[in-house]
Length: 327
Image 1: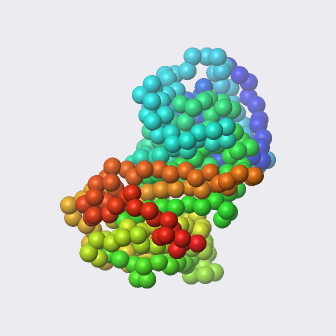
Image 2: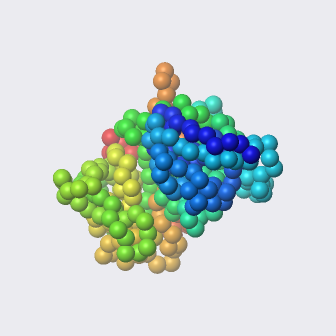
Image 3: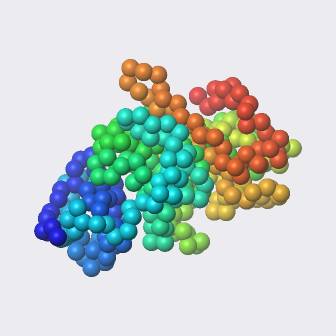
């Protein structure tokens, strides 16, 4: 066993969760072991008890209790061969800076009290310790599509800054109920987090400027096709990165995303097709110094492919003229 020690959160580790910090520094410590150490107060941040999902700040002091030596046999495999193969099957692109994955719908990005299988846990398939990739952004559990992870702390810092700014271009595809009017434009407004009556931890609602917790949000949209005004294929570009932004904006416009049980509108959902959320992170365009932007695209998940076919939408259509309306 090691001795008690105190470690300082580095600047490039700011805003990561405590459990992810532990996974990075002590990959041999299992999630169950860490949860026990947290429950018993053996792990502390600035002297106080904490939970694994607490986000850290640069300069904070973490009390690390005695731990098994790194060479000790871990309690069970860190990742199963099946999960490793599954993680590798998601890879769209990789280089020395990042790995791009096509996240399937239903897979959470991070763990929780009742979540045992999630994308962050699957990153052990690509390396452990300092070689373990780092999350730099997130997608909702039921949203599919492109998500990138960084291969190093310096890459994570650069990519995280890009995601917070407007130089990185994010493009989503959605099936909306009905047809937006006008067919292309902007949806703007303020939103804030509030308590959910559905048992979910995060629910966003419209808010007024100046209201406590209110954040400005801007989404550009353009309609690529429609099906007898029952539904439409909408291409979305969020210019801000608020929680559930696209889902909220389409719902408040009166044309919620098909399959969204949390953010709804007066138009009934489509019949005869999947009731899963029809929101897909289709493309990322990442700036690179001295080079052309890195463009990453993810194919549609099977349930959206089937709905496109049922509605007569051609997913192979040249959407560049439609995307030009988003600039």
